[in-house]
Amino acid sequence: MIIRKTDEQLDQMAAAGAVHARCMKMLTAKVRPGVTTAELDRAAEKFIRSQGGVPTFKGFRGFPGSICASPNSMVVHGIPGPRKLEKGDILSLDIGVTLDGWVADGASTIPVGPIDETTERLLEVTKRSLDDAVAQVVPGNRIGDISHAVQTTVEAAGFSIIRSLVGHGVGQNMHEEPQIPNYGPPGRGPEIEAGMTFAIEPMVNVGGPEIYMDDDGWSVFSQDGSMAAHFEYSVAATEDGPRILTPWDSA
Ligand code: MG
Image (tube, rainbow, N blue to C red; front, side, top):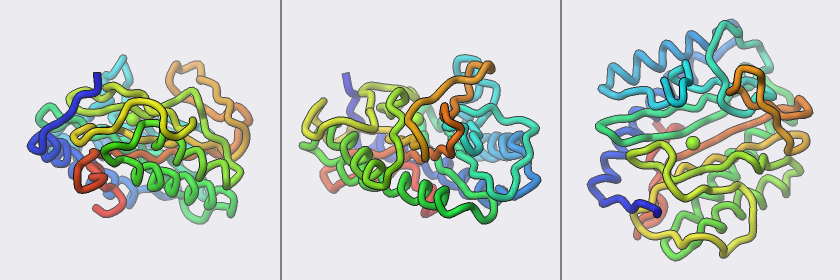
């Protein structure tokens, strides 16, 4: 069952999302050569707790970090640690904030200094595929319209959608129904209704779509070692159109 939220509940999710967005802005400003992902993790946890929130990911199925920090060919679920960022890296930061029982989930991929042209295009295309998907979050559309929008934008640019990882509903739980694949035909799947809330998260490789999981049981890498990007918003369907609940790029 897809849980619909009331307007008041959407406001509560947006309050969690406002903490999320400010956390992302704060971390993005810290991303530079020489910084470790553990430092970013500590800064995130401190900030989220200072706002009365809880880092959603911490302890989730035993995950040790407050954020996921995934550099370069690592797609998602990176455990923060001693790795120092280097010029030319990209870093996917995935942040979950729980505030008053409501979850905000969102991610951005950030360049560490100047990056090569292909990687720059990867980030631009993956972010644009997210924006195109958000535009489909309209009552009367279907989940497949979201999926199709991501796929169309990414594949037109010659990059690969990772198919085995999907977006999801979000609310009082980080993962609710429905699953939201980043590929597939339009006009299929559950109908979108006002009050539904989704975490839409295109995950894209420069090379092939295959991935593997590291021995640590968390880190997911592109199989061919190519660069990977991940962008995510939590977004609500409303009668007035899509409402982005984690506006990390306009915080
Ligand atoms: Mg998510």
